Image (cartoon, rainbow, N blue to C red; front, side, top):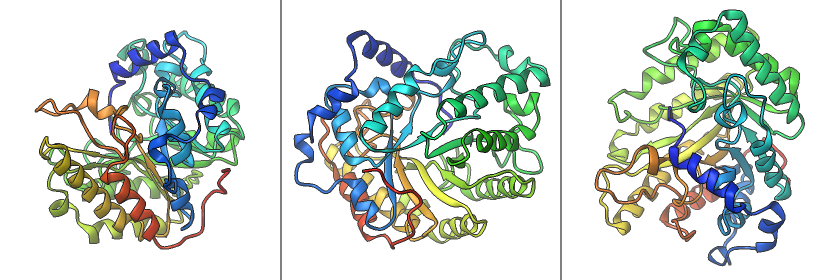
Length: 391
């Protein structure tokens, strides 16, 4: 989803640094959260059928209680914002700051989790330290030097420690696109041209050859909140992938963000069309990863019971269809707890009720969504596992 860097994320990150977030050793010593006792962790449920289950998390979320739950439930860590440029390179003249990324990767390693780094090439995530002219005003040579220099340094820094990279994020579009489906309203496209996408994949392969290389996109499930149908976006994505593969770009996997809209999901979700789309991706030899799964609970009642049941039903309907495709190798939630969801800051409910899009509530108690995700993983067809889990 195209989002801005949450002001709340920045403020909480600063606050966490001020008071001292839990260290990896502190997290490890906290043990299994009481709320999770007696349940098989989601990562283990998924692994029984060859699926990797994981979640995003960021250093500013490493409070006193959540990290232990995350370490228990997730087999894979997706870097939510610690490798975005507002952290990695906060201003054009700033040297690369790997501190936050190093901390979150060390957390994953201490808990024997796989890792996906996000994102190498994206047109957002810069923060207030970058002006439009800093990006759109570059010459082609300057833009190549900037983008490619950061990618080279980043993949070299984490070489052998990432299991996958989101190499290109949100680079296709059915409307503002060229004839190959690539978005033109991107600073890198404007300055470098569409070659920046294939080039980024080649750089990722050169710098970290064992890490899976992923192109990531959103908006394939239902008509979105702006009324755009999913099928044109699916066609644009497939067209762009075909172009990259024809060019010899080393694309290995398709990432589907999976930001689901609860309002009318049952009626709007075209199961047959979605199955066909997944099959088309698989037929191109690509692994498929669901990378940022959550449920926007607009259109649902404020009452917690009915809302939680409706959110769970969305997860159930979506995953039952999605996991039938054996090329789907991973399900990665965009967070595990409602305590830390980008939706609360970026898209608050009009009625003021706190968002409840994830598997655990703000007190880390499992919700019906947790049961729905677990049941879908448990009932999914068995498949060949993409990665060997470290746990």
